[in-house]
Length: 495
Image 1 (cartoon, rainbow, N blue to C red):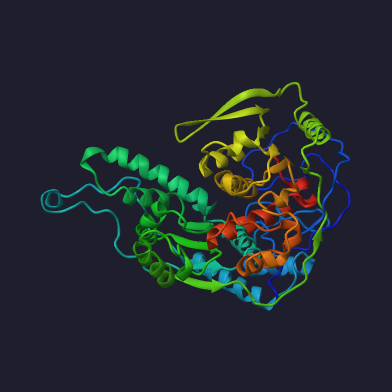
Image 2: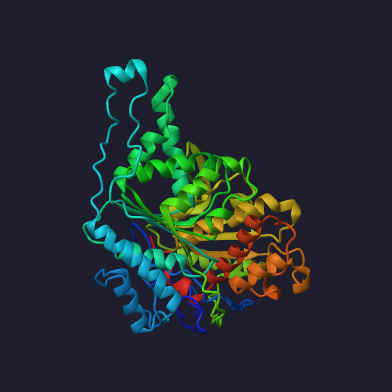
């Protein structure tokens, strides 16, 4: 049996309207978003994988009749899973049941677990240590009774995020020190904290990771990381020490990844320095494969009209019409060149209201923007328009990478997206939109098959070569398909 997955509704209607529910937002707007007329331009249907990662941790879980389980009382993971199966939202699956039982085990362990007290300030060094050694930087071993964490890995769409969010959403009510975060955003936060710690330590120096780990542990002793991956040497160099210190402070972690620990940071620079972190993960976590190895049928999804191609005057006018409909409230006018700030840098938003932004592709991806910049943008705007996206080849590889990073940020933050592009959005990275499956590498074809993406829809690309690049490319295509669905259009974009 394949892991249980959502059964999405299929509808032919193409609404451009205010979302019916908010997913994962910290604030909402009471201002109604006006209904926009569905433009009569070229419409594309696509097959999206049924192995979609559904969110239910602190968010609404969309079901077939459009209702939500967000208001349901928290239960244990196993009880909630059975409830979703009984309601028909999820399909029963023996393999996924075994994973849920592991999460239930951790849930029960946390009921009995008492995390150690963590001081908000480091201990004062003794007179002896001032002369003969360094001050204590925290405990050197995990506390007694620390529950073993979980490391869940598998292909995109095997339900990793859904399972982790189900666990997070059913944590006992007395656990208030908890955090669920995308790993990319977590590492951005960590680097900011390390930078501040170094500044505080000054010329005397010292270990900046120790106070960062202490502060993180004091804020949350249950940490849930989504999409754990290591592609950056700066991350690789600090992760082992960071995780070891977090565990010694009594932090319990659940993380999802597309890779077994042994496959993390493969071929990375100075990988030997990262190997101790791999060994730490295998020793301190229960490593579990989510892939049951059984194939299943993929369900076609009805697409909402959010992608417009080609770049004709008619399509440009239609996108502008939709943008004006979303920003028609006179009390919240469109402001040119709004400025956002992150990491001491300034991000200029060409056109925006308080909740809706519009960028041209060069403004968004033609500049040296980082993941932190895109996260800041999606944090501020629930609906984003990106116009004039070109078909990209080898000469635009940097822009393609930034666009993929931007789509990842939009997906994680549940942003409503409207795009106008030179070619169908799923083929913007394609060297030849009419390419045959035989022109795609075996590895790429395997990844696309796992994602439910037919090669004649996406096409081939020679821009992406390494495993991580190929995976990011295929994942982006999969997410673009999902973000163009009616379900996404109806539930995304609230602030």
